[in-house]
Image (cartoon, rainbow, N blue to C red; front, top):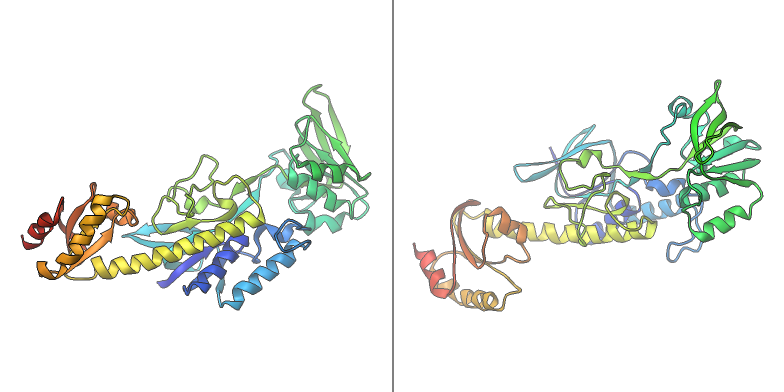
Length: 396
């Protein structure tokens, strides 16, 4: 099985930034992506809120990020992620091309647009139904099209489509749009954009290609046809995290739960960007997450290697676990440092507060505590109160 230090899943802004920071920290970095690096930003026509970049296409920004990661020699590999697993304490990424063992994993697989869920959507996908205006907008030169949705994505994609279409309807089920005011002002100053509120799409119909939408006004109940040549669906997003379900903690919608260090509920597995439970999903926040996740992974890998050499590799070792936020335990650790030469056995001093997961792994429910290990296996452990207790433990 291939073994790597840091495996990053996804090559969007979060993953690419994590690769840059991981490589600069000296880690062996492998970045897995199922398609073109860049994630969702490659289908974004214009980005004007990324610091230092007044205006750029999503593809331009993605290309720049990839070039930056390649500059630091990050390795890219194409593949589909099937699952992640923890086996005997080892983290494994399962792909369609085999398995990879990793010291740490960063999940940065992003999110995807939801489907409208109406009859005809699946039948006409690729034949008039699209989820990417940048990809397919040019096919609708001088045609009438519709956008389904009421958020920023829907309004921004509608604006992009006016470059090609003769008329763009924006259909929203509520009586007001959720998009930012600035986006709405720009959109509705364009004579090619026509809003249709309080309306849902009952079905998408046509022959070989989309020809019309069947609409229903949710207030009046009136059903009517709307002739269009294309339909662009932007009704929300959902995380690309099916492979992680049941492994890391997630919310009901599938969003991965992390702390401020981007740590998930599984030791050594981190998440960054749009795939996690976060207030804002933008390029800049995804990049920030990626940087945090990479540095947290670096700290984790470094500490794990240190702990492994101290605790798990020696045939026999004694370790004192104390908390670095408890003054009495800090004093006890200082006293234990002076005892190292007296006890006559290897004595490791471990900050149990900073290494809480190792403390949990060894079954230490209370600190300060002494533990005896034999080739990584816990032989015995005991709560200690003073230097005399440490001496007694080490001589038994």
